[in-house]
Amino acid sequence: MATWSRFVEADPLLATELRALIQQYGPGLGYLATVRPDGGPRLHPVSPVIADGGLFCLILDSPKRRDLAGDGRYALHTFPAESTDDEGYLTGRTCRVTEANRLALVARATRATPAVDWWLFELFIEVAMVIRRRVPADGDTPIPAVEPTMRRIWRSASTRPDTQAATHVRETCDLG
View 1 (cartoon, rainbow, N blue to C red):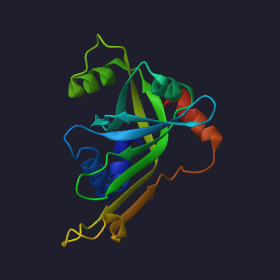
View 2 (view 1 turned 120 degrees about the vertical axis):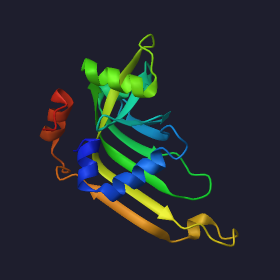
View 3 (view 1 turned 90 degrees about the horizontal axis):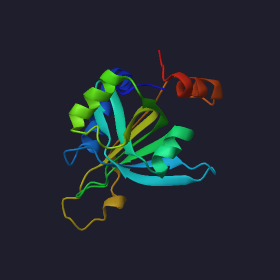
């Protein structure tokens, strides 16, 4: 798995495309899928934040916070665009950030108040994907029928069914 900054170093084009899709309306918007304690999926709207070399979500006390604190696996899909069927997608694991300087930096970047009970989670990336589609000039062609003009997928070098590596990230949040 990789931090956002390591992902940017590994594939700057894909990172630029993903950032543009995440922030296409200004602040980050997307849908976060988490894993419930019974193993089932749960989907939530979120405002992801890219700051301090990381990809973060500030999460209030909620089922999604309990899911992330318990299991940590996630999938993040970008918010749908108004005029295209472009999409961005990330998967990986999260880790709760408790280091005071990082909390303060992300709180300032998002204008988050300490009076609210939010936890900061960093999203580590295993897989990243972007699909871009050209908008038909005639306006009559349904967008899903349009062939993708860009399809790019990146996988972390450590992407493998290795539960020991996943456990290490959950326990230490150190991707060293």
